[in-house]
Image 1 (tube, rainbow, N blue to C red):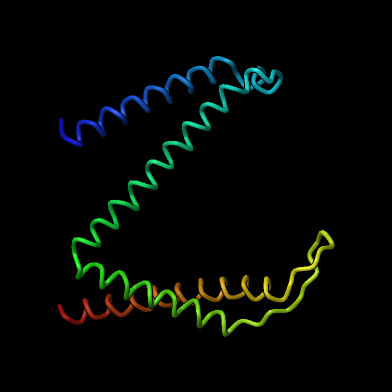
Image 2 (cartoon, rainbow, N blue to C red):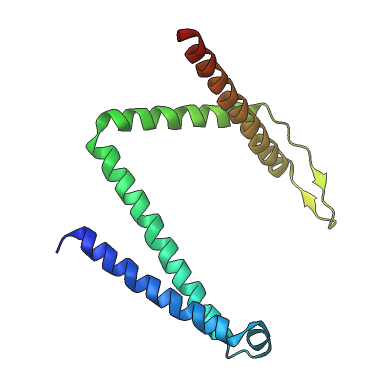
Length: 147
């Protein structure tokens, strides 16, 4: 049996379990679940199944991506260069930010470092948006001029 058949069988089993829990939840109804604690166990099982599926999907995506990068050195080089550019954007945004201690609406204080981190995240977002828009514009104009 190859790996694709095994994955299909596992996906089918997980799907059938999920459908079973979904039907159980729909048969119970909202009010029965809210009123009785014992009926909330069905939701717990459904949530646990969702966590397991999310974990499997995350691990498989990371593992297969890393295997693909390791087996293709040219793709690894491009990925590391992209990671470096992203780190550079984050560093520029961090140094362009100023942290100011701020009082929050609930009366607590946001530290200067926390404020700087939030501002750096917003500035990094803006830098990445401008970079993406600029690259789309550049390549769009370049494509129109080459025709």
